[in-house]
Length: 207
Ligand SMILES: Cc1ncc(COP(=O)(O)O)c(C=O)c1O
Image (cartoon, rainbow, N blue to C red; front, side, top):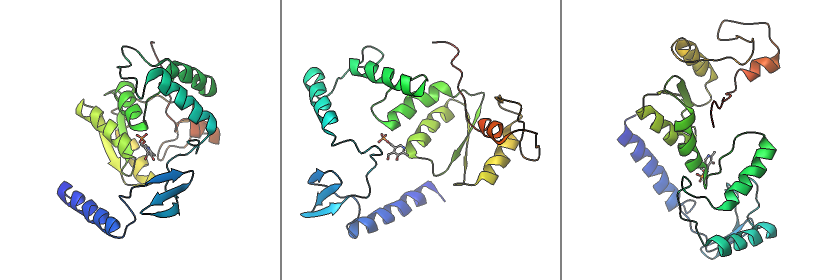
């Protein structure tokens, strides 16, 4: 499918959804899981708030206090100076996740800030074609800098396995244990070891 055809297919889906009154809506009021849309109260089943804490009284009070101390935004590059609350939150998350942390205002900005730093041109990147746009955008950035990037069809683990086998000789690979299972190669390993090699680990060489 050509890019213009993709855009026009998306455009007609969006137009149809808008015509039926199910997308491109505006809520005039929000109260917990209820939305007021065109004078009618509805239950919102489309929330992306995985923790559902936006009406928690403690968070509302904390947000109000932060706005009083820092204004409605703290407009400075983090390379220069950060709002001190970031440091506090990163410290708390560091304790929870026991890893290196960097807070970003949105997931998209987090991906754009980190992917080009942690992915080098010595590795190949394979992305599910239904991966969220925030990751695809970040991956586009590394593609322009010379990292090999490929898309595979959604959930096609067979295609993924096939592409990993085809690319593995040309790009950097480091197994985290003795499980060398890959395509036809089957090694004597536990399921736990097998799964560990299918996750990515980052080694921070210098801070
Ligand atoms: C899986 C996933 N990733 C990323 C995002 C983008 O999040 P943000 O708006 O914080 O950039 C969303 C939100 O729609 C999402 O559902």
